[in-house]
Image (cartoon, rainbow, N blue to C red; front, top):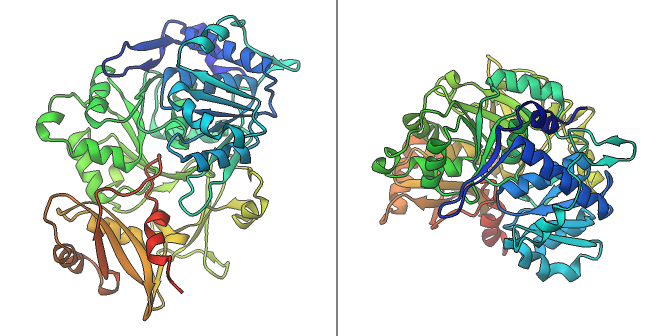
Length: 509
C-alpha cells in the first residue's frame, strides 16, 4: 500500500499537517512535506537501533507535534507502536513496558523521570530516546536521510501494527494487538457516512495514547487534514483553538465537553464555535442531559456518537437527527460491521428490547491479547468478539448499551444497570457527575451506591435521594450516597469504578 503521508507531501507539500499551539509558547506548525521528512528521518534513526517490523516500541508523552512525528516514523517502519499512558504509576508503567517486550522507549522529556525511576525493572529495553528536551535527540535525527526507510526489500505498508493497552478499568491492562490500524473498506464506509472532507481541521480532545483521539488523528492525516494538537486539556483554551483554527471535527469523551459547556456563558460567548461540523462522542456514555448542553452551545447538526472500543473499533453510529429521538441509544450498526447479542445461556438474542452480551465481527477487530490467549479466547465466539458490554436493540435496529457486564449490580436477584441510573441522575441540577456501583449488602447481596460530585456547596443526601425517587423505579434508587471532589478516571475519561468499589468490598466476606 502507498504511504499516504508521502503522497500528501507530494501533492500538497505546503499544506499545514500539524499545529502545536500552547499558551505562552511559540506555535509549532509543520507542513505535510516537513512532517514526512521528519517521519522518514525518525524511521532511519530507529532502523539504526535495530527496530524492525517485529520490534515493540513504547512511546510516551503529552500531545505534541513531535509525538505525531514519532507515530508516523514507527508506521513507516511497520514497527509495533505501543502507546504508554503517562498518568500511570511507576509500577503500572513498568508492567506495560515489560509485558509488551519493548526494545525501545521513546519518551517526552517531561516524563523522562518516570522511565528513569523504573529503568532497572526493564531488562528488555535497550534504548531510551528522550525527545522535546535539550534538542540533542533532534539534532542527531536531523543527520539521517529524508527518503523513506526501507525494511528488507520494500518500504513498510502505510498502516502499521499497534498494541494498545486497555484502560484497566476491570483489572490489569491487556495489550490489544492489531496487525494493521484499520481495514480500509471499514474505515472508508465510516468516513463516507459521517461525511468527512479533505479540508477538515481535526483537534485532539484527549490524549493521543488513547485509541479514540489517536485513531481519529490518524484518519485525519489519511484524509490530508490538518491536525491541531492540544498539549494539555483546558476548557477555555480548547475553545480558543476551535476559533483560531476554524476546527471542524474532533473526537471526545464526555468529561472534556462537560467542562467546556459548564464554563460561564460570558466565557463561551468570547469564542466562535460555528466551525464545528463533526464532533464524535465516545469513550464513555454521553447522557441525554450532556447532549442537550452540547447542542445548546454548538451547531445542532454537528453531534455524532459512536460505540466502540480499543479491541473492536467503531461498531455503531448515531446520527445528529437521532439524539433526541432515541435518547440513550448509541446508534445503528456501522458500515462493514456485524453485531450479535447472546444471553447468559449462550443463545442468540433475536427479539427487540431483550438484553444480551454484545459480540462484533468485522475486518477491523483486534487479533490477540498479547500474552493473554486465554482472555482472548474467553472474549471470542466463532468469528465474533466481545469486550463484555451488555446491550439491547429496539424495533428500528438502534442499539443501547445497558452497561459493562462486570459493572452490572445484582440485588435481590434483579439485574440493575448503573448506566441507566447515571443517565437519570445526570439531569439533577445538584449533581455535576455521578458514578453508580454495587456495594455489599447482607440482605440483598448488593445494593446500589452513588458516588456524587455535587454541582454546588451544601448539597445533601436527602436532595439526591428525593430526585432519584422521582425519576427511578424503587429498586434502582441508590441506598447510599457519598460525595467526592472528583471521580477517578482513566486518561480517556472512563470512570475507574474498580477504584471506587475497592474500599467497600475490601472487608466483605
